[in-house]
Image (cartoon, rainbow, N blue to C red; front, top):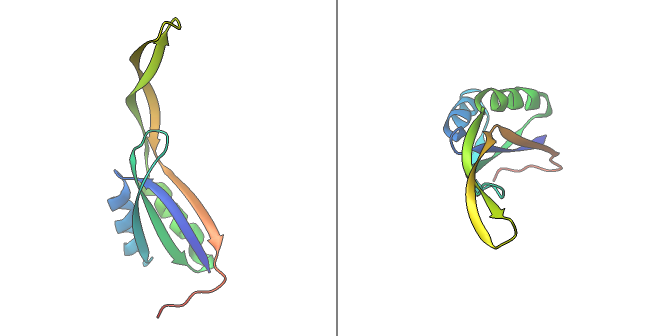
Length: 108
């Protein structure tokens, strides 16, 4: 048995969750926040049999899309202590997925 941790964008969470449940996966959702952009994410916990891991990852990949966003970046002028913001284009979305072995599973 495996436990899949999938960190997906808040924009994709409903679509990913819906398709995982439709495919017969049990999903627990946890709200989380990224460190770089301080953006809202959702961490999905999915317990599944070893042979279904690839199917689960395929669904997550299919419904977690990357996209470009413009965010404000900080810039200091000539070391004189004047800060300004400059627009910065970054890639957001997609998914970060961890698969770990489960030594024991009980549902009580």
